[in-house]
Figure (cartoon, helix red, strand yellow):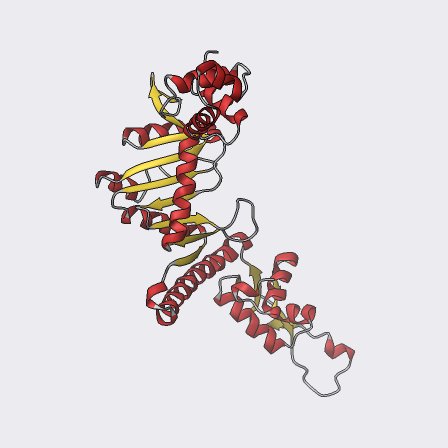
Length: 355
């Protein structure tokens, strides 16, 4: 189990023995583990070098040597004389000793990850066709994804679009200053957040900061996915969902066709969302700004909501049936409604009809 921090099977058994049974000499450990004394002493030296055990001398005694061969029982019971002090080994606290080894392994693993990423980049540069190089990149791990988010913000020149799910974690002031720097360069931020994110801890403070930087924020009941788009040329979208096994992964996209599709998705969500502003020092959600039906279109809408059929509306307003249906379709597009039911709901939501 501890091979990952450099322990062999023997060193792990000896360390476990000392943790479980307390201090012991090399001879005792050799006997209990069934290991030759030389191997036991070598393993104990390795454990001591790793800081997992410590050794201290303990006085011992040994029998006096026999004076003649074949000594009888009387001679065996001869007085003892002091012998060389024995070494007793004790285990260092696992929480301290093993954590030090684990920290070293984490650092080594991180260096290996960076080396692997550099090699992957070199491989991609050497094997990809110039016209299609780096159009799509898979980014794995929170640190790498955070680095890409920072890069996208620092590279934005005119506009940054973002969809935010869950906790409000894209537009708050960041430790690197990439967002603040982008805003100071004149980059316009448009962000859509999920409504439940307004109830997240400290979300109000983040909203104040974002609105104070003239960022435009809207709220929608449900955001389909996290998404960041810079200047319509590069996008970052997650590949995994919260709770999935393994490390999170994201897709960095520079392919124009894919970025265009993601931009269309953002604009559709933006059109449905309600703007967020400040009123009396509190974040408030207002009605979505949009054109409104006027004149004949408003009369058509009122008659429809009163239960009139398309033909009845045409007869009452002196219009052709196709004209009425064409104008209804235009009002539905204005309200981003796919059905008549959605049109009625949107008309009420946008204040186009009386309560």
